[in-house]
Image 1 (cartoon, rainbow, N blue to C red):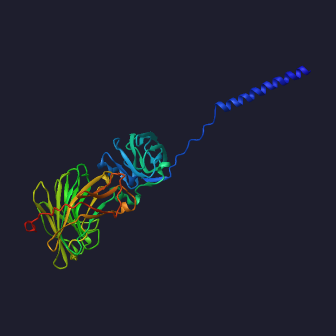
Image 2 (spheres, rainbow, N blue to C red):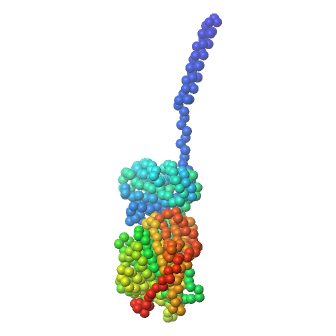
Length: 444
C-alpha cells in the first residue's frame, strides 16, 4: 500500500512539474509586444500659409491655397513647408491628409531622412509620418513629393503637425496672414534728413548683386512720404522702372477718388505707361519696361516742390549706363498737398507670393539730398525697419545694415540671419556728390 501511494505521488509530481515548466517556458519565449509609442504632434502648422511648390513657381498658385495643398496632380511637384525652431533633436511629423480616389504613395523628407507611405483614407485624417532628426536650430522644411496615385491627383493636405524635443519653440505663418506671409517680410532703410533744410531733390544708386534679381522683387530706391520710385522684376521676360504717387484721398479703389484729389500726369518720357492704381492705397503710377541687369549700378533722381493750388509736383528721372543719359519717367501732381520731399527711404519687398521662399538682396549707395538752398548733403545715416509680417514674428528671414559705403537689405529665403528693426546704421561717406546739370534734364 505504501509503495502504491509513493508511486502515485511521484507520478503527480512529474505531471505538475512538467505543467509548471511548460507555462514558464511559454512566458519566457513569447513575450507580449509593448504598445507602439504614439508621436507627439502638438503643433499644427497651416500647410497653405507655409508651403511652396519650389521647383515650379508657375504651378504654385494652382496647388497652394489658404486652406492647404490641393489640385496636387504632378509627379514632379516638390512641395516644401517651412518653419523655424529654437531647438534641435528629434522631430515628430504628421499630416492631416486624405486621398479620395484611392491609395496614393508619397515621400516625406526632413533633411537627409525620408519616409515613404501609402495614403488610402478618403476623408481627412491625421496620419503619423514618423520621427526625424534635425541637427541645428533655425529654419527647416518638410518636403513632400508624390510617388504614385490611383487617379488624377494624390490627395489634399490641410495641416502639417510637428512635435518632439526639436519643436519646443516654433515660428510659422498663421492662416490669417496667408498673402503677406507667403510674400515674405518687407524691409526698409530710412535716411536721416538734413536738419533745418527742405529737400528738393533726392538722389540714390542701386545695385542688385548677381543672382539676387528674383521674380517679384521691388528694389525701391527713392521713397518718400507720398510715393515711391525704383525697379522691379515682373516676370522671367519683363523688368520695369516704376514711379508712383498716392492720392491724398485714402482709399484702395481709384474709382472712389474725388476729382479734386486725383493725381495728375503732367507729362512722361518715351515708352512710359501712366495709369491709375489701387489695392494698396490709390493714385497714379508710371512705368517704363527696361531690361536692367544685375551687378550694374543704376541711378535714381526725384524732385519734389510745392506747386499751384495747394499741390506738389513730383518728377522722376532714371539713369542707366547702357543708355548714358538721364531719362524722364514722369511728372505727377498731387493735389491737396504742399510740401518738399519728406521721409527719404528705400525698401525691398516681394510682390509675388509664389517666390516668397527665395532670398533676394539689394545694395543702396551714395545717397544725397539737394536742398532748397542749392546745396548737396550726403545722407550716410539710416535706420533699418521691417513690416508687420516681421514685427509680428510670422517670418524672421530679414536683415539689413551697412557694408562699407553702401546700405543693404535682404529678405525671404528662410535664412537664419535676423536683423533688429529700429537699428541705426552709418555707411562710409563717399564724398562723391552727383554731377547733374538740372537745366539739361527733360521737362514735361
